[in-house]
Image (cartoon, rainbow, N blue to C red; front, side, top):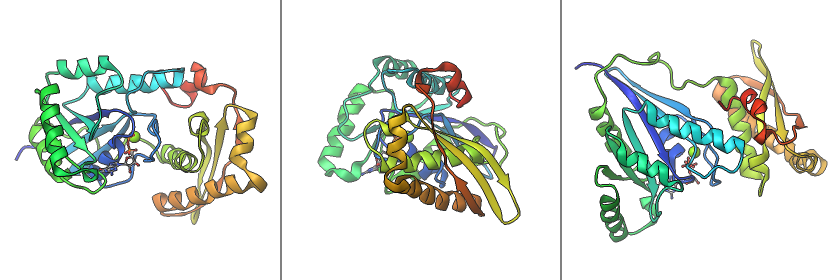
Length: 292
Ligand code: GDP
Ligand code: MG
């Protein structure tokens, strides 16, 4: 059998389960997952290696109408996912109406590459409803092959994977066969800390935070990391730190545990909080944070 390889890009509305799907397919927790929209801000590659194939998945931010510069950059990651795809995976959740941005839907319809439409979260409803959804989507997007899945429960995920391998072109691998992602350990440290903030804080806080690793020193039996948590306003700094510093302490210790698991080493983690006014709308700052 000739080696197959290609890019499978996953797009869809916020919160439908795109990151859960990629993690299930790759078998590693690469993308952070929360019940909040806009958890994923970058295009993150997840690589599935087998002696006979290499599938390069892209997890992308959910499709939204951008309200500030950060979100505009997030949507440019979504647009780029159309440009190099060999197969597009369009994920929807049971009961949803369609994409928040009509233009992206039109682009899906115009694609000449194969499109798999994944109807996710079928664990939440009865079979008759699933059948109705299949009929409804077959009308909306007749070009697509439909799969019903539960990314959370790993239901039908192997079926999707096998179909993807069939659809991949014959090609040598694009990445080292040991690689599981294109992103660095530093990036995942930042994401793990941001995940804890998304989980524990409400309202505007998750959307006002950026984490940046400033120091990452590998010593023999410990890794020393300083990661700064940037917020947009002084008042947000107080909220993150919390009463007697307990809020920040919780973020630090939960993140440290996950980072230790990822690195397989003991970690000393410092997380100072700093104000960077309106970083979300400052293009220079966004560039420094890696959003371009
Ligand atoms: P994304 O924004 O599209 O990347 O969605 P996430 O992967 O972050 O998931 C959003 C929420 O949906 C999380 O709370 C997931 O646990 C949940 N979720 C994902 N897949 C399923 C599923 O198959 N069934 C159910 N019930 N929940 C799911
Ligand atoms: Mg996501």
